[in-house]
Length: 577
Image (tube, rainbow, N blue to C red; front, side, top):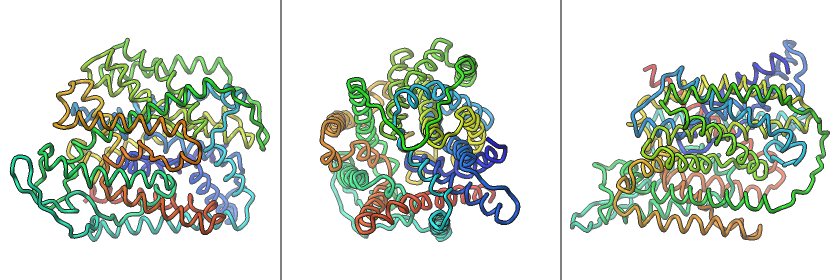
């Protein structure tokens, strides 16, 4: 752990954090920045060494850099893409820059403490794989061997990022929106009113953007097909049905009718995501409890360096006090509820780490819903407590899982875990301030901007819907929504159960209920782009398997990072203007 390693991680994390804030508010997804941070750090310090301005950049230094940078980029899990905007929509409460930064730091520190306590159990005793950590370790090992392969990846990352950013800036400058076919139909509603509906009104279009193409390439063909299926069902079938029955009133003009339609579609969409996530989560817990875990041997040298438990206990007490104080002073949450939220967060963060260790997927949304349901019973009708206690749970789970994957990387390359924890804390500090600033710049008026075609914010819509039902009851739902929810719940649970018990071959073809539900709450053109990215990646993988294995993730990362940074820069320019 050197000063330049920590500082490099903080700077790279500060550059990458806006990408996750941007994509989190756009589509509710974020990108693991560990590999990208390792590549960027290696490129910078290797160039500095060749120019005579730096000493060699070591593998373990790069691990510290990557740990800090990924901590900064994962700060979005501390509430910026879901509960904090949902609170603004429901109550009008917004947070200042300093208060928001402090809240993000406190929530993230909870996750760091849990991860530090779990490291010995999950990595040394149970030897969970933590797949993302293994991929990062292997990639870092490759690039530090030197040679043309490392430089080829860096050139490809730079080129695709520049291409994506240039396209984003060009379409923004030319004011080019999604390109829809000239299809139009006239329908008669149950009230006898004739309305004209076009493909553009429903969002059935192609978007000149590479962001979702990049996400599709990473997500894979199953998710891409599921998103396409969800978009066709939601925007091609249910949206016209809701208009014809008068459940949704069309907007004026020829604009996209996303806002009024998504207020109805989010109910079946959110139900699909929540029921599928909770069912899959519960089944995975049962399966892990019943199975005897086999001991795993690693190809890398394992450094048995346990965490100091006295320091960990002191950190637990400090973070408990900080979290309870923050909940009480910022959101007026009672002492009892605040303490319960922290204790529940510790328990559910442990669960998140185990699930992420097995599958590389962190069920932040599902865990947040458990807390929302819990506090719906403890403090019925209290929307603020419902959202922000769940924020504590989800944020702690996200940061805990991120650090566990980094600790796995460090374990495989022989790093010192206490140094990584220090780097994680510095990364959180950098990420909190940058993320708070980015969010406030991008979304100065949440009630006017969010859950629109420009900022769909699907995670915000889901958390808001659950809080509304728990706070206001069934009266909060629009006409026809209850029937849609029942059907969606049956489908979500059924698909999750089928996936859990199916063979590996059948799992690849069973649609993802969570992906289908996500397509209900984002514009259809985003789902189409994601499908195209997934399909293109699948074709390339079939034709050029070796090239695909080494390059597809790099290309996708470039698409995501390039457009995200361009979008943030565009927002800053607009604000300055």
